[in-house]
Length: 147
Image (cartoon, rainbow, N blue to C red; front, side, top):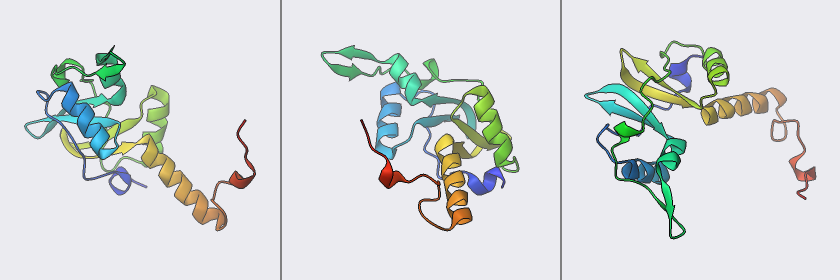
């Protein structure tokens, strides 16, 4: 399978001058953990929920997210792939580099994004089809108990 077949195409993104607080609001609103940073149509960085947490502080029992620009906290050297990249290669790269998303680009223009959750969904769907029964994992979830 190729990246263009597995990627999310409707990607939420921010520009470098957007505040870190705005990035957090978007992440919460859309239930995502990564925001590509796009300027004049080109990918220039990425910010994660972990980056937002590192930039934040705890005040009066609440998380205080700064109004500083995303550009002050974003990762600039983003690992990317092409639409023709193999999903297996993307997954191997994510494991090796310990990253949880890879934007899909064409000449720095953002086409989509592949996250670790997307890859897990692919594996889960393939497992379900392969077994044809149960939850597709081979694990009896009904038999599991919590301590």
